[in-house]
Image (cartoon, rainbow, N blue to C red; front, side):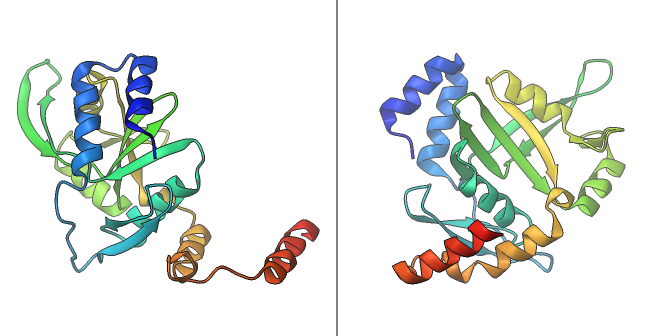
Length: 207
């Protein structure tokens, strides 16, 4: 995790507006801002993170958010990732530029990189399709990419990038591997011996 001095230096390097800085500071102190929910479609999972200071992160879906968190954990470019970081009040603007409604939105993750602050929202593909059919909040582009224009505009004013991601982006085999390795990633799991480690590394070197 970044030190308080380093995160403030990063704000300067990214020219992040003060409102954006306050939101990041809030997330780093208060995440998660809401208790995750266990429903018929998902289950609460506690995932151990060495990157995030040897803490357990409470995530809402084993096959969506937990898989995304595993990717962030293993991605060296991602310096920090905060689940359920904050709740925002966003204006939804219609085609004529008028505010048609307002929405309370708690995104899934705040990500901190050396060159950007990014907000990610993860949803099942089927749920995204249902939400898109109900209005213009979420929409799917011709290239298959999901977007949320209202959130993109809101976070752009804060110096952040907003992205909507579908669980469909997770390769099936990757999801299966993440679930298989859950027990091995527990902090209570003993480290392999030097002899076993050498054998495993040898297998990967040969193949």
